[in-house]
Length: 355
Image (cartoon, rainbow, N blue to C red; front, top):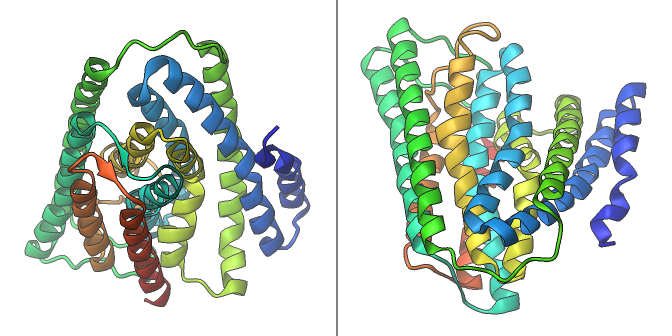
């Protein structure tokens, strides 16, 4: 049994601490450590599926299960009217997967395996969609400003916009979801074309792998909900802003599974799967999760949540998607590139902490 599974008792411990109303800081750290075992289980199950179905399907399954907790937590936040926290967590998830996850995967994989290569054909489709996803909020911000509205601030909890901005945002989000569905279909076809016939894999069955992914997804969601529930009170003690919590803390917590798996498989020289997870998760958040939450805001909670971002979010999103396209253009990664991405992520996180 690998070391992450020794932390499994922290899962029921976090539940008990939450039920008895323990100090928020204690719940925060116990729940954070409790995320590690189900993330490791998700990594093992994803590796088994990838060995049978290839990195494309394995990566898509992983990012889907990994983003489910973030979607659930965001729906609760929508009900509370915390629109700017939700948007910050979504943008933080995109830049975290590109800069933190991909950077850590390149760094760890490069240090252990040397320069690594991956197929650019399928990844190129996802990076193109990421560029579109980055352009959409810019267009909506320009439309809002042209309509006499103002962009949100980093300290606002909820900003009201006119009906025209809400309508255009809803239409754009519907188009993003459609574009994601079409790009996902094309990406799967490309992975199938590139896939080679593998030797028979003597590991978990597909049914067992999917069952383990489902169990891990539920546990990650439970731990994430407990952790996020303790963040507000813990942040007052630690002294973190809500914007930083949404863009960095909640984003990392909601994507803990992908973080672990991508670095794990990169260390094992499976860079195709690592890049598929990092870029695929960013694309899914930007093109599916965020638009779904915008549309859900019309039915959940006070007011609606158009996809209009503040200046910090727009700058970080635009820079990250451009870097995603640049660093994956040649199908080759090195530890130096990974270090550069990590340094940029730390710089952005520091900026978010100080605003």
